[in-house]
Image (cartoon, rainbow, N blue to C red; front, side, top):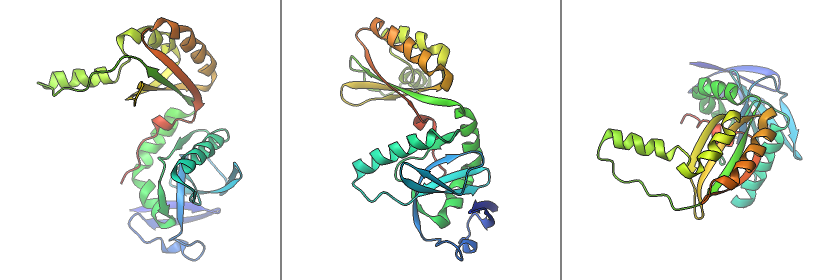
Amino acid sequence: MWISFTFDSRRYCVRRTGCFLLMAHRHDPGEDLEVYAVAAGSLPARIRVAGRTLRVFRVESIAVIAGPPLEVPVEEALREQHSLIVALAERVDPILPVRFGARMAVARIPGAIGPSVDVLTRALVHVRGRQQMTMRMAGPAIADYQPAASGMEYLAQRRAAQALPPAAAPLGEAVAPFVVDERIRRGHGSIRLTVFHLVKRNDVCSYTEAARAAAGRISPWSISLSGPWPPFAFAPELSR
C-alpha cells in the first residue's frame, strides 16, 4: 500500500513497508527525531516554538510534528516536552500530543503514522476547539478490584472504575453541562483518582467556576484543579 508523504513542500509516495529511498537524496532517512504531536490542517514545513525549530511531515491527512530529541535527563525532558506541546497548542488547533519517548528514524514515520490515520483523524475532529481540564481527587482509599464471579460483576466493576465516587456526585453534576468527554484513572498515593475533562475553549472559565463552587460539597473528597491543557488524555495510541 502506498502512503503520500510531504516535507519541505515536496510530495513523496512510499510503500508503507518500504525503505523510504526517495527521501535519501534530501534528508537522512536514518536520522532520529522525537515525534511530539500530530495535527490537522495546513502547516508550514518548519515551526519555531519555545526557542526550538520543529519539522512538519505530512502523512496523508495528518501533519506530524517532530524535532531533534532532547538530550537531557528524563525528568527534565518530560518538563521540556510538556512545555513545548503547550506552546504548540497555543498556535495549532486541533492538535494531539504524542506519548513521551516516541523517538524514531525519519524513514519510520510513514509506517508508524499510516495505519493510524483514520483513528487520528477522528480524534482530531473530536478535540478541535477543546481543551483538557485535569482534576486530582484526594479522599478515602478505593477498594482494589476483586476477582469477578461473573461477566455482569466484571462489567459493574468496570463502570464503577470509570465513575466519580458517590460522595462526589455534586461535583460531577456541577461540571456536566461543560464536559464533552471524560477519562478517569486510578491515582497514586494520596491522589486516589485523576479525572480528565475535555471542555470547549469558551467554556473553560464556566467549568472552573462550577468545579470550585461544588468542591466544598463533596466531603470527604477534595480536588486540585489544573488546566487548560492540550488534550493529553484524549490522544489515541499509535498503531504498532
